[in-house]
Amino acid sequence: MTMPRFMVLEGQGWNCQDETAHAIQLAGGQADQVYIKHLIEKPEILQSYQGLIFPGGFTYGDDISSGRVAAADLEPVKDELQKFLDDKKVVAGICNGFQIAVWLGLAPALDNKYFAGKKASLVQNDSGKFEDRWVYLKNAGGNCIWTKDVDVIYLPVRHGEGKFVAPPEVLEEIERQGLIAFRYCDKNGNTDIDYPLNPNGAVKGIAGVCSYTTLFMMPHPEAHVYGLQHPRWTRENVPEEGDGMKIFRNAVKYFE
Image (tube, rainbow, N blue to C red; front, side, top):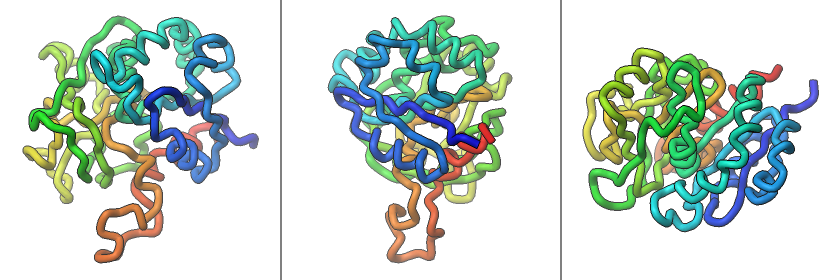
């Protein structure tokens, strides 16, 4: 079978595109790094891909609000992106990519409807500072191809605005519809935790949301694809493969 092709966006302020493309390639897929302006000028090129990833970084310097300017730039791509999703292709957003997806109305997808307006926000961390640390995540049981057979994983976070918030009725529907991908937890999978294990104060410990073919999360799976990237790899017997690879392998396997 031909390797599935993933478009990994890059542009002003994105800085995790290389690692993200590398992770897809390690998982057996093909990754093309595409400048955001090329996609905006020719949105139809999206249809030649099977996957799309908004990587982490600080698009446009996080001016106004994290991800907001990039989301505004991507408004002309919405129709092609809707078609892409209708065809059951896969989309992910990591850190700044999650913030962009929220501003676009791409996440959370209540009732499996995309671009139905902004339903949630990612706001300033409760600590009032940039958080750069490693955290544990627990699969919240959402029906998502990206998180299949993933349990508790260990990944880094690097953000200043990562606290997931939404109106009570939206939070209720996100939970009822199984749209929570990951919650912050301790190393044993206990989600009843506070700062610093929940690095930003996210409501209900929400670290990521999903639909069947989409995943949007604040922690960085592309930053833990090798065991030697683990912060204690010289002191602990860690697996050769990092926890983030499970997520990328699932995305590639989906097309087998």
